[in-house]
Length: 319
Image (cartoon, rainbow, N blue to C red; front, side):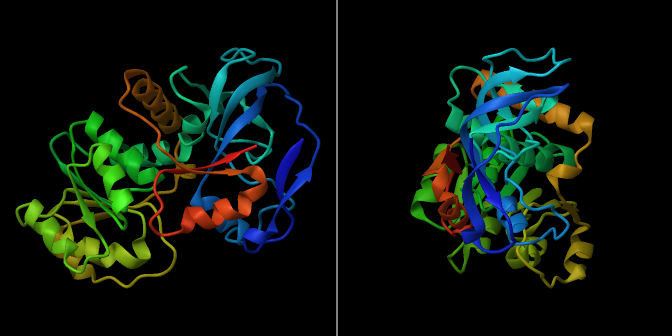
């Protein structure tokens, strides 16, 4: 089968399409014939060497969607031919076939395409964990999504509307703002405009949002602490460097800052997340948005696109 392999850390050019052995399902495992692959920023960080202990060569990726092609002993929750999305892949998801633990393959309804399903795990699980397992957002509160047009941001908008939360988001392009509004944001601001935080204060009657989801903390965390409401909660979802903040801003508002790493979720938290995703897909509240599509041979271009400013929706690879 064909798979992307990383033999050395570096830029996108180290992603190589190679022929490798097709995986075989062992006890408690399934092999998924991959139809679409979700590309996430974390995979670019790993590729560039953020975890030097990562064994090489390796195939990147956790998120994919496809069809259960073979089943190992002891698997009772899946059947051959099931349409699934993955929340992990033992052999990596950037491939034509992926070896997956049975509890990390989740059925998808027929109305959800493979491309949509490939964008479910990290974006929707991250957004759910940020809103409800970290910030404990409550119906009627206001959520500010600092970067609302990407995969996690759009997922967060949809979760908010399901749960009765008011949403104010930002995006850097007209297209991104249009998508965020279409998905249910109550207001969308241009974070490239010099006065957009003044508009945020106006929209919240001067008190600030109750919850902020922050996708670029190295740029925005200091601004968030100045904008958050008293007793507000900021969830750090993404960062690409260091940042200097004034702790007195947190003190004055008695604000809380939560760091989030999806991989730290407990087994019980993961079960809750994927049960919520299943319900959201069935009732139509969750509608994954596909942005750009690339053939698997262009994985390097996909890694560039997922970090590019102004992107919207989920970046997808097609094997």
